[in-house]
Image (tube, rainbow, N blue to C red):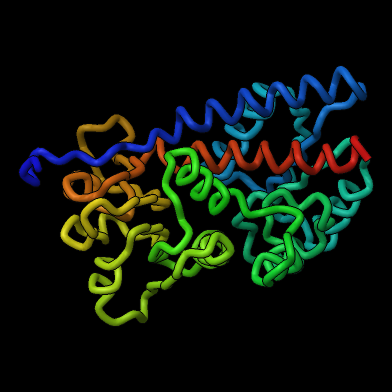
Length: 299
């Protein structure tokens, strides 16, 4: 047995896995196009001019183009009324060429996010945030039409890395509607024993130390130390946190919720930030759009 100082976790290359998935999607899109003369369509609704939202949207647009999915871009002014936004969503619900609708969050303060997301047709909810999709995910023996993209990407990374989930102890750090909660429900569906650690949890390191699988989605830079990780555990780091870095042109660099350098010395597998979960989220969005299109086109 090598001494612990030589140990290096297997780094799960999310970029490479996402690339493989995208080429699988591109093949299926080609087949749909040849057989039915139709391609999947994804509508992306963006309100206002947030820089981060703009860059996410252009990344999604490029990803669609790459696999042959038609993207519909709907840009609305910051001051748009909630009613106008909802009527835009209804218009997209009714458009047969649109198989997925994504409303880029966050929305401006004067708009009720929950209300808007609830108006997206269940059949087109490629983000998987509709309460009925989350509700079905929470129930035994029911399957949601769509799984949220980031949690789905996390599980895909585990399965494509040959990491089994059944019977394992999994700890999810964070309980957001977007990642923490749905990923814990997904792990439960895959027969893991799941614990959720959050801001009110006492002695989180004690709980995390027992985990065979750690999904970190707390949004706190380097919060999870290497010493908290059980030897050989699989660590999926969803955190994307900007920390000041004068050596970078942008003035910052991105780090995860896990201290990558230290955790790599003990974990069995670990995802890097960037280049881990991020590319998978976009790949799963494309996959959800493809699945939504297949349900409509192939019936």
